[in-house]
Image (cartoon, rainbow over all chains, first blue to last red; front, side):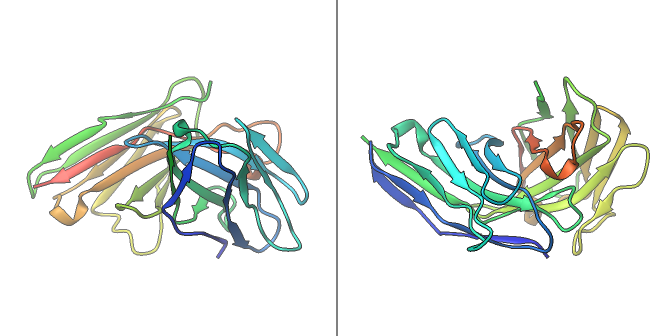
Length: 112
Length: 120
């Protein structure tokens, strides 16, 4: 079925460093792709999404581009802040289209 | 908008008892809700799809008699963990999708804040 693979963490960066979290997908059809963020003890919040090839999702300084040729949706941010410390999940539509299938999550720790 | 409220946020119960978790869509109607389970430092596993007015659809390997799902209204789905055991201890998260005029494929899921279940 549709699935995503994302880089394993934890990722530790200094404040203002550049962030990349890799995500690649396997899917039938043309799923929408999502990045969610989970802060400690909380549920998931949508960070950004892209619905078709070459779309770029962006929010709060984070960006990800839907690359069909490399089946990737890498998350980037030019300058991370301590408040960005969280777990980031890449996701795509399940085969039924209704639910989402998630990657294993990448923990990010940003130090001052 | 698109707020999903989950209650309780934490619950501790004794082995053999049952626990009910509620998931409400506060400002939209949700004909379909999804229940996920998250193990420590792992991803979310879809347990079941809750359908308003009909039976839930369970993922392979999920015991339907143990995880009872009821979706009695367009704004409420409940998950009852019956005869709980320590191995049922986990973080349970519900979600729902706001249907827009476009395809449901493009609409993101909105998540509750989760319920931390500890079975002693």
